[in-house]
Image (tube, rainbow, N blue to C red; front, side):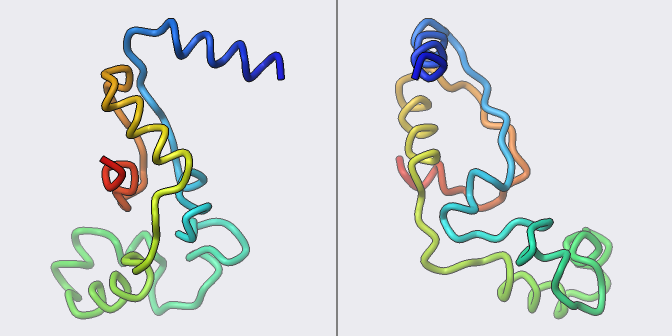
Length: 112
């Protein structure tokens, strides 16, 4: 518990915090990541996910982009988890000044 208390003290003393996060923040909310066993890289598509999510693919194959997007990116029912709620709380308190992430779910914003 000593490490958690030390981290809490650092956060409490900080004037500005920048959060760097990735897919692990949202997997608890049921949003799959790309690399895990059930992730998007281990599913079969005609194109790799990073190609489908590119601007070029969107411009050239818009229907296929949206089919993937609606099927795999927009996950109805995903709710903010404890990490999202804490980020929103720190942001509202003025402690958290930036969230840098690859996530596009916006779940930490939904808690405000």
